[in-house]
Image (cartoon, rainbow, N blue to C red; front, side, top):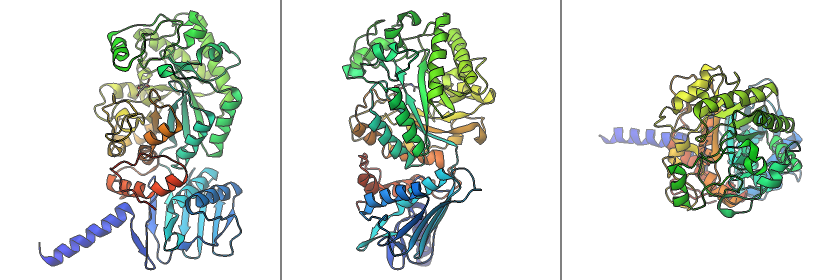
Amino acid sequence: MNRRRRRAVTAAVLAAVVLAGCAPAVQNGATVSIAVVPAPASLQPAEGAPFRLESASVTGEADAVATLSALVAARSGIDLAADGEGPAIDLRIERGGAAESYRLTADEASVVVTGADAAGLFYGVQSLGQLVQPSGDGWIIPAVEIDDAPRFAYRGVMLDVARHFHSVDTVKGYIDRAAGLKLNALHLHLSDDQGWRIHLASRPELTELASSTAVGGDEGGFYTKDDYREIVEHAASRHMIVVPEIDMPGHTHAVGLAYPELVEEPVITDHIRETARDYGGELPVKGTPYDGMAVGFSSLKIHDEATYDFVADVFGELAGMTPGPYLHLGGDEALGTPEEDFALFVSRASTIIADLGKTPIAWHEAGSAADLADSTIGQYWGYVQPTDGMDEKARGFVRNGAQLILSPADAIYLDMKYPTGPELGLTWANGPTSVQRAYDWEPSDVVEGIEESDILGVEAPMWAETIRTAADIDTMAFPRIAAAAEAAWSPATGDSDLRTWESFRTRVGTLGPLWTSLGIGFHPSGEIPWVTE
Ligand code: TNX
């Protein structure tokens, strides 16, 4: 290659790096980084000098002002609320754009964020918080123009509070963290073999008799109705809905502690024996708390009407406590339930939920059942590769006229071990799972034969067999949760220069100091070039 050509190539590569990583750019002699996660629909560095935060003033919607002030104070120590005399930040709502969309412009003179609604403004403020950075002896926001809107309406995280119970404060902290990445649904896995975690007035025995234990003999717990309300309200203040899941007809050993007449004897297979051998714990015994990690041995009684009275009581009460549109009925790994009985059960349970005026969600296994309530959303937890027939079950929901939530286990199961780092986590889903694997997949390529419009969204589950504390949640979620958020929010891979692993790892690396300032104990994965200040 001759020298001129080499120089041209080098320039092109450099331009690509700046574009791809959005870092660094030079504005008025200062080096700035322009990195937002999840990648916005459109982001253009602007001409001119950056906006200086010292003595800036902020006006506009009170909630957004409070959110931004907290972010700026955490990151920089600057108190925006102290009525600055200098250039102005304005945060406002201008109706008319797409739901949850916003526009952000920053230059030397001003920063303006306009949301199409309160959620859009909140997301614009989150992007702005990510752009705050040190420069020389002060703090700046680089000159930039962002136009942004989500790809998918449903952008979720799931937290398993059944295998290990997690306090209201921990859940609220996870809501804050997820909302900061523009996620808008918190799915709470409220019951499993190891415990029942929500008090219901119609069935008080569930928490009286089935909530005190957890995996490994650890302490259990449950949410009172006030606790649940507090979680729902906190989520709403961060523009998130709560999706409660009561897992049925399997994963119901704990139900049998309160209502032995509703459950079958545990089905002990070789798989259950192997799990007990490999991970410890006793074999399940009906009527005795179970603290092991095996799945697929318990079942509700399918041919007893008392079971459906129970289902109606539980979902009826939850429907009244849950303002969001969804109730999740579980339906996964019901290996202790004969196939035809399973189909009958999920059909009846989904109909009970639909009759309550709510939209049922079920794990993908239920997609092979005839007579599911029409509106039932499917949640796919198979792999990106291979899909192994699980995609066919998922297509059942689409054939039924409903949509899918994608939670590919080999990519965005946040409870999978990292290749290096914390000892926490499981490996069954083709783990360990690197940050790159969490990132490198495209939602429209997972389940063949469906349209973009068949995808309601993306959700990253955190199962809690090995996850005991808020710090455990942080280290397993961060940074991989950001990869899930990008799959859920950002343009499809191929539709944006920012939607590459190289760009993502650079952008995520710039968030390290912000996350630290917010108290997020992320895993400092060696795959990411972390910025330190
Ligand atoms: C599978 S994937 C489960 C859970 C476990 C998890 C552990 C799915 C719908 N169910 O019961 O907790 O694996 O990673």
